[in-house]
Amino acid sequence: MSFEQQSSSATAPTLTLHHLENSRSQRILWLLEELGVPYDLKIYKRTPEKRAPKELFDVHPLGKSPVLTDGPKLTLAESGAIVEYLISRYGKDKFGLDENSDAWVENMYWAHYSEGSLQPLLTRRFIYKIVPDRTPFLIRPVARLLFNNLDSVLIAPELEKHGKLIESRLEEVSSTGGWLAGQSHPTSSDFILSFTLEVFTLAAPEYAGPKTKQYVEKIKSSAAYQRVSSIFDSI
Image (cartoon, rainbow, N blue to C red; front, side, top):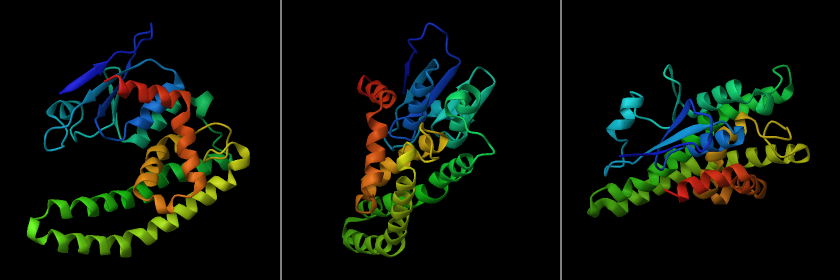
């Protein structure tokens, strides 16, 4: 099943964001709202098995979300690629950076850090928590003990390191706007890392420092992000 919301802009949108419920598209919507470009949003409901429906596989062969289409010729998956494309094509003046600047290097690092380093750990913690509940009832206590031990030995120490790293970076940029690249405005790394840090504060709150929590709340309280929230509230 899918739901389609049309843009209220008088200009006919060429952009369509294909969003699977309970997935990572919020950050793309936040960027689209910040850019102020017209777009359509198509929301896909998960199957009873919590998988993507067939309609999403018709858009992209992997059935993943988010997927961005721009006119009839471009279909683009992967959140990082979508963010970079949107900024390069529609928001270079607003969110772009001088490629010769230190900020450009910092932005590149934190953009890749999100999916390359932090998100895999959070995904593994999530898997370790749900696997015991899906094992046979009689062995569930043993499975829960096993996966809790795996988390405490393999995941928790790494998340603690990441929490300190993120907190340190936010402290460094606190006097220049509080965004990851040290600018007075968000850049691609902020859009990409926003979802991951929101998950981090929920899945590993013991390792999320005060500046990390403030950063997430700053994003969630922005006017553009509030519009994203209202979109989902209206569905």
